[in-house]
Length: 499
Image 1 (cartoon, rainbow, N blue to C red):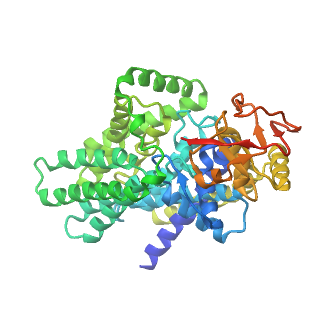
Image 2 (tube, helix red, strand yellow; image 1 turned 90 degrees about the horizontal axis):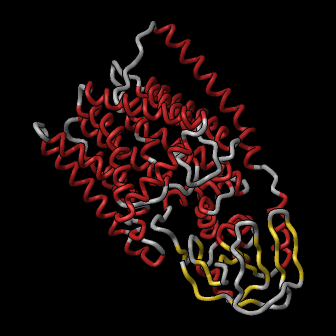
Image 3 (cartoon, rainbow, N blue to C red; image 1 turned 120 degrees about the vertical axis):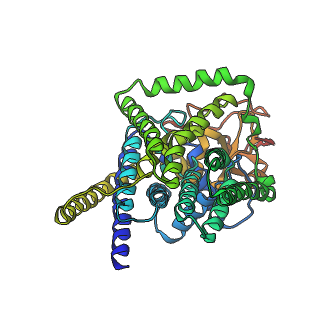
């Protein structure tokens, strides 16, 4: 028992080092824009801090509710004396650690011929290599592994999918009993679907396909039927649980499905792939993904038990189904294709067999690997901290002016999100469109109760203003990439809300 505890603890310590290394590498690239400054990426931090501050909550969310992500961020914020950027950096590491835990579940129980802890760490390293090849600042790039480090782009859903695969594998490996595994699977499916219906596409559908096919000629049809019932039941329960949150769901996501635009979708994703292949790192990432997919097919053919076959099959089937589905529905969002990043790496733990080497050599290899991981992680901490603490005098100029003004202003979505998050009182900046209508999207709608504003914040992304009343600013405050149009005693009325 003690050896098991030591082995598993070593795995988690190693995973921590690897996670810090990955986060430091991604944060040191232009991808840090998504981690710390992107308008979409800040919703979890804004929501969690708003809840911790108390007050009325009436949020306009997308089809994703971000419940697990917000809970984790709020917990970190409550116990760690860090600023918001440092918390986002810590969240990136936590997300990767959670992924390791899910991968460890997929790797299965230790057997005489297996090394699931070592192979789980190897998979995390491979995933980190994929993330390290992603260096653009674009949220729309086909750079999917690094999205796991953000608080917004479905990190909890990815972990939920991988956990579900691991639970199904454990049921198949066990062969009998295991009521706790079925309960856990149902709970994970329900919570994951509640927070993000994409879980049904990424996990429920591929798992159902594999389980149904596996039932042909199987002698354990009752067990497979139970798995199907739990998966479908948990997913359905999660969808029903979304009903109390209906007022917060500003967009159900149904409008994103436009099957008639499947040909435009092909062009869109094809363009993203071409952009990905236009850089050496992008080519490396694409080749590695193809190699993993090919290995998944090989492992499917060579699998000697149901659990290994399930993991190997979903490693290539989930990406195929998701890509076909995304095109068939006419979607235009790279983030929907994240199974292309996290599913293929599962092939590595489909059958995590141990290397054959003398015990003395094995201990030396493990010791050296552990030291290297710890050193790499330690070296990466200052790198990650430097990225989180990178000075932004333009942002400080805006937040200092707004904090000192004791007034309320407004700005458009892509402009106002970052300053709003960093204000002492975020409600001092109201999110509007170019006509000064309240823009109720990923924001607390109680912000609009103020009814009027007396200054506007703009930058290069701001659409030309069309103000509801004639007004000329008394002063224009230059803050680098930002400008503050100060109307002084003149107030501008807010228009009706839209999303």
